[in-house]
Image (cartoon, rainbow, N blue to C red; front, side, top):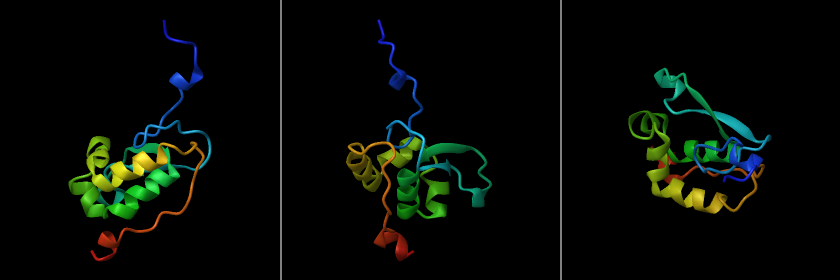
Length: 103
């Protein structure tokens, strides 16, 4: 028997898997708006900022347009491992990756 627990039905971030909570939430387009992406997904603000600090719009469009592909990336995987210990409302600024700055 499954316990009667609201946490089992609470919406979760599609990137990190933590409960979304009610603050510091953004919406992410898996296919960037610049490439006519329409579908939006609620996601933690810190997770959203991390995605855009690591990838360019072209990279997101060409390669990282699924949650699975995003989670396979080493930088994102390291971030998820780190943020997993934080509460849902946690937010701090995210620095732009040096590799992205050079592109």
